Image (cartoon, rainbow, N blue to C red; front, side, top):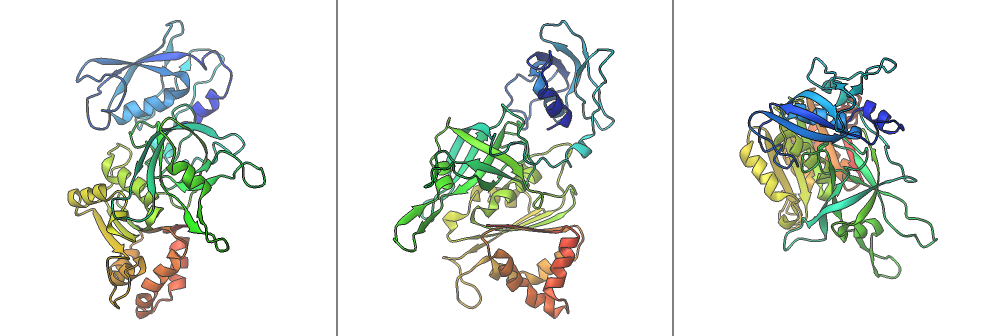
Length: 406
């Protein structure tokens, strides 16, 4: 998806920076992964794709993922012949002009490239200006609050990210002191390839913050969340980041991934699940077990409900969904059902899973989740003669304990 060689080159002023090149590609076939691409694909023969210089390496990787093979690369004006380099793993290097005084760019296998963690490509003083291409409601009738799924076009820059990272949004305007608003961080809800699987978008799951002022008793709405929830399609949005290395999905395709979420804390887990099941790429084919325990107030607040139920029906051996619906379900003591009660119910199963070094536990949502999980699991750990805090330290040391709360 991303190449540091391209990023370094695209920032230079060269004769090639603004030029277009034509790839001749064979081996592509129409499928669900490339239906949304904006060039024709035939079942046989060559396809000719025009590519800006700054996106050459990215396009090479995408073509390789779709089973294609580049047989020639030529400038659109056909004045300068090019050659492409390839790696043993099938990844392609950056196309370079054939000049005696220029070294050929070295390419890296996809297994190395995907481990690179991009951080702070765009900073608050110079954010990337994307455009909103999608904004729709996630809460069904009868639910509480406003939660929107937003998708932004990022095709005009170098913004790229991994599942489990966050981006910052800088709301327009100034605060009550006349200073520009500070950025707010939001967990990314899309895979590294975006919702359209074309490497051109990033998506968020945003709840409008709403609370009662402690003194005036007036309803206060969050500045950035309200801005995003009401954002019109076509509007600009200032984006920073990405940031975060704590919540990254392991490369192991046989891993067991336990995900505990409340509300919009499902965002990074949506990106995990879409990569595991909805996308099928040569560099990642999930064969392990994914279990989502999701806490919400009402059934109507189960975000992405239809897709989650579809995954559970289609992949019963690989995906499990457990919900804690506080206003509709009762725990064993007759009180409201929260996520810690589901954890307590499943303590033996969770404990057994966590003994496997391939199991990772993730938490994302409201602050206090971690203590709730401790409440649910520590009694069972004590029965096994294990101090819960010591066990958590062990998981952290093994990089199997991942927490993001707000």
